[in-house]
Length: 188
Image (cartoon, rainbow, N blue to C red; front, side, top):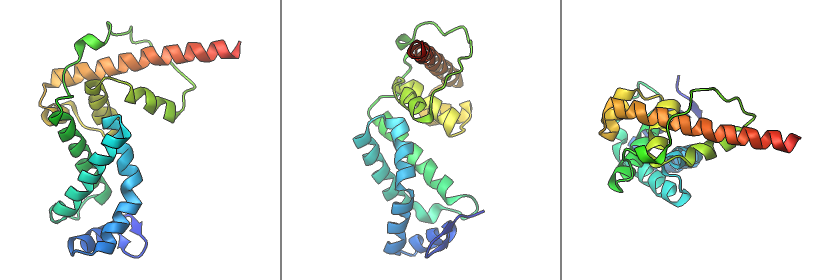
């Protein structure tokens, strides 16, 4: 189901207006979706200025490629994919995505850690992951890509994708354990 957009009806109507060259529709799209798209870019880039650059490039691509939107699925979902692809292209261009095997100690025992951590703190932890781990974690856990899709996007093997995700989870668990211990000390 297409979302309702003030002045333009549904998000599909907004997309049609943009494809017809309506600059007011472009402005409305940017105003409505830029915060959400910036947060997507920030998850991959880890730096606000870099994320803003990627987001702007992403919107330029959206406006440029609007004719490729087929009006069958979610327009927002289509835009999200473009933003993710822009971030991945930027990371690949800077050769920032690589297998970072040395950056993590042996994987943790797989013990689950329950923490009273909020979403903002968790996103901060994800942003602190090495670029390769963060990228695979975001694509798999947040964007819902399969390991096959991640492997294709990042030009790595499925095994590498699985390994990077496993190591990202292990690092997050280790960091959550530290936070949990700190919280327990504060309570005492």
